[in-house]
Image (cartoon, rainbow, N blue to C red; front, top):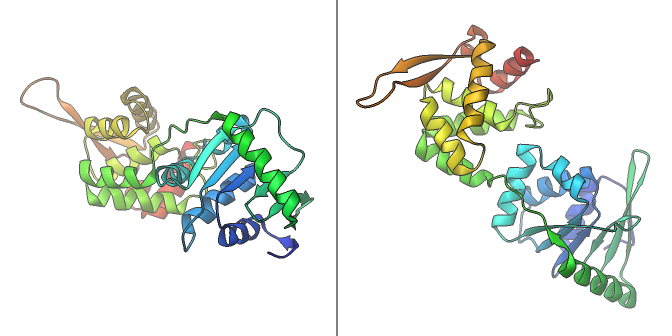
Length: 272
């Protein structure tokens, strides 16, 4: 590895470390951006990933993982055994990437990022041992978001392949899925996809609860909100026993005429 990785983006630094790491990697005190970029780089990585032990500030992890896109991809990495998350009680001054052969300090200077690296054997061994022990003593972070691969697989099975295609296309059109005005949240996306495919509210909410996206009650509350705003409509479907179930339908003409990328944009503009 070059002794200094200056004038690089954080994703370039992360990719260099992942490509050259022979064993486990300790990612220590990463920034919000570094966590997001790591998940993106690792998800698209062409090759065998090392096991990455991420030691991060608990609040930072929670804030980053509020984005369903980041969290669901991180959950895939965890399920694959290539990522594990634990929390730091005392953070070092810099963000560090520690491997068996290198230590890289990630330094932010305004809008510039540099990776200052050393392969000094004594220093690297001491740093690796330090964070290996800190890792053993750190508390695990429980990421409740389901892996995106399981979300897609079960949606195709429980609702339809077309619904899964729509869900994936809408996610791909978004930069974030937080439901904070910058992106639709995962429950809203699920309901819009269900409405586009005229699925039953019972089926999509049961799927969402079973896969771990949100409770049936959350789906019901969100459906009511979207229906009140005119995005969704419903029609009653009689069943043999019990109360009729509700079929979801697109309620706003602008959404009916939109493709998946436009659907997200139009829905956001209406919700805002």
